[in-house]
Length: 266
Length: 78
Image (cartoon, rainbow over all chains, first blue to last red; front, top):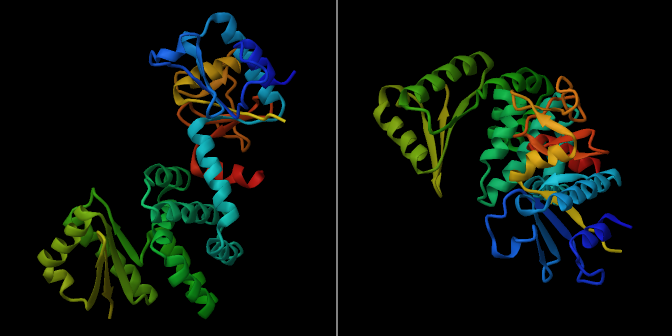
């Protein structure tokens, strides 16, 4: 008897009832009207919801045994949001084409951890491009790979891997090897302004980058801002810190609440 | 052949861990109920907290974290 048949027997669901595709186990029924027996069978959508808080003890024991059998058969038992993300990653892995080219390019030439951070960042970029929330994904990258991972995520999202690092490697492997570490570890070619930064922070971060850039012959620094608050912050900074920023020729790109300021270094 | 997927909600994590004879220690890490000094591990040997708990595989001995990196690796295994 399969675990599904055992589940049906446990909750008196007819064996020839419509197909069940999805069983979700919850703790809290939230006193839903249809949860008094500890379960709800959505026949139209092939779903069964189990509510542990209203489940009798003997049925809870039955669910425990079914869960153990389900795992024992080699299935993964996943939290529902984890399953959703895993499914999205499967789809992404099948359909990523241009991202696969980027990964194939960098796999042999960057450290394995950086490659993993890049791989995750390319997925994050795709999610971001659909204007979906990327906060948890970004936190996950930062938690696993620290500031370096955070820099890789920012640089990747802004296109630096394709538009700067790939051409750099193709033009000079030596220059790439010289600059890669400093670009990724210190994000020297780009400052990504976030909500916690003020004008002094921005100016200080640019100063730090200027010192490093001059040593390595880097000819530009970009300032990135996303969202109204950050865009306004950057524009105010450029205006109010004219003594500092007035020194640099600059190009400003602004659209859809995104700003990129290019400072050209002499 | 009818094939269903079983999942659990975030609020059911503790009960699911109880089903699997696991408990949560004071640090929020998943441990063996019968031997709380023995911590549950992921496939790459990491400890796992209840907040990070994304699921289990292989007879409940291998725990899955719910972060992007762990799931990216898992998605390529299948």
